[in-house]
Amino acid sequence: ARTDSAGGAARRLRAALADTSPRRWRTFPVIGSAPETGVQLGGMLIRVTRPSGARPTTRPTTDRLLARVTTRSQLSIELERDAWFADDAWRVNTSLEYSRFPLAFHGFGVDAPASAEELYTPRTLAGAVLVQRRIARGLYAGAGYALARTWMRDLEPDGLLIDGTITGSRGGTVATLDLSLVADTRDNVYAPRRGHLVTAQLSPSRRWLGSGFDFTRSLLDARLYRPLGARTSVAVQG
View (tube, rainbow, N blue to C red):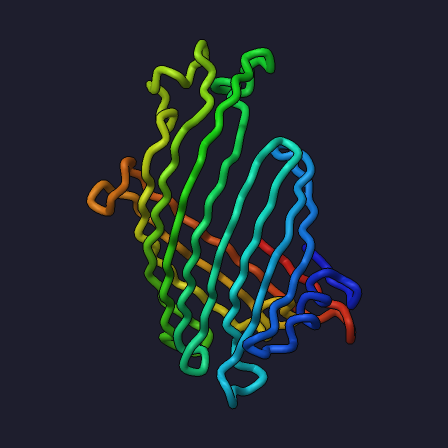
C-alpha cells in the first residue's frame, strides 16, 4: 500500500502539468539509486496537451523524453507519446528507447560465488506501439507490437559468455505481440484519488514476428485508489 500527501511528488507533478498549452514543456530532475546501477541522475522533459474545447476530465496526450546516467557508466534514453482520442475511446502509445547498460554476470543459482563475476555491456534499441479501444465503460481491449534488438559488447575473453552457448549471450532480437484487456476507472492518470487499474496482458514472442526467441510472457497487475481525507489518497497494488 502507498499513501500520497499533498506534498508528495505525484501531487506536485499533477499540479505542474495542469497547464495543457501545446507549447508548454516542463522539466523535472531525476534522482534514484539501485544495487545494479548505483546512483542515477537525469532529467525528464514532458508536455501535456488536450484538444481544443475538450472537457477538463478528458485524458491528456503526453509527450515525454527521459534521459538517465548512472555512476556505473550506464545510460538510457526514452522517448514516449501517450495519446487519447475521441473522448477517451481510443488510446495510442508509442515509444522508442536506447540503453547502454554494463552489468555483472555471476553464473547460475544462488550459490554462484561473487568471485565468478564477469562484466558485459548490452546495448539495446527498442520500440513499441500499442493501440487500445474502449469496448465498455472503463474497459479497454488492446493490441500492440514491440521489437528490441540487443548487441553484446565488452565480454571478458575468459568468461562464460564469450563462446555464445548461454541463451542471450550473443544478444539478439525479441519481438512480441502484446494483447491486453484493461479495466481503467482512474479519475486522473498522474495522481489518481479514485478508481482502479487492472491490466491483463499476454505477450507471445515468435519467430514469425521477427523474434530470435520463442516464449510467452504474461502480466496481471491490479491497482486500487481511494481518497483518505481531503488531501491524501491511498493506493494498493497486487
